[in-house]
Image (cartoon, rainbow, N blue to C red; front, side):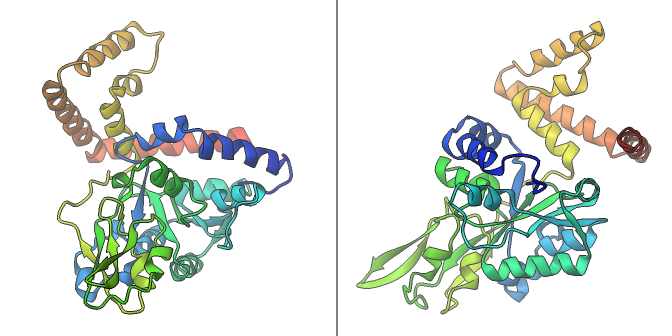
Length: 330
């Protein structure tokens, strides 16, 4: 959130709080997008040595930071907003990370501060040690942001807990508890940002119990477990993560039956109107037929854009567009 004094921050925060935390229409729509916009990054330090052989680079927040062409750090919107409505926690606000072209734009406009890779990794380590969850762009390549989230202020976590939508956020891990080692101290219950752990009594002994329907595999609980009874285990059903933003948007459009509006967006051309109707018919077919059409569209579309010539053309088009925007803003 900007801090340049050009607007009433308290009034805006109250409006955002009403829109995001009281009313449900917007958050339901956002959480209904599939593939999800954001995903949880597992705490790499919570993994056993053998698990590091299985984790992929796009699952590592540290890899995102190291691969970024530009890194910026800015004020956490969620905690900043909560501060102005009197509900903020004590966690730091200067920890919101953005990357690549998104970071370049925020830096140019004074919204975020450009930092080095070393400084970005330091922000990550600081937040992991505080028990914050890393939630970022749900894509493999060209990740735009990673937020460092708490369970009391973060919009995504609050919405997931309120609406029961945990599955779409999850990492490829889940927490398990060794009941023989567990002391039943309850620290993990307090630390879990998704409220996925409760204390239960078995044979006269209190112990932690993980609700796997709520566990997103962030690893926060394992960091604060004094007895080391909580461990992370890799899921067998690995989560689908789109390759890039284009793939995520296209797959979401197919899921919503709106792909035709993205491809043929000029309502003035009769060809676009006709082709929108054509695709509209496809998306009104019975589920089995629609699934078949969706798979064909996806495979043909992605096969086309992944060809070298198409990638080069898209890259040139993007760069030309960036130049036009820069010239316009001069």
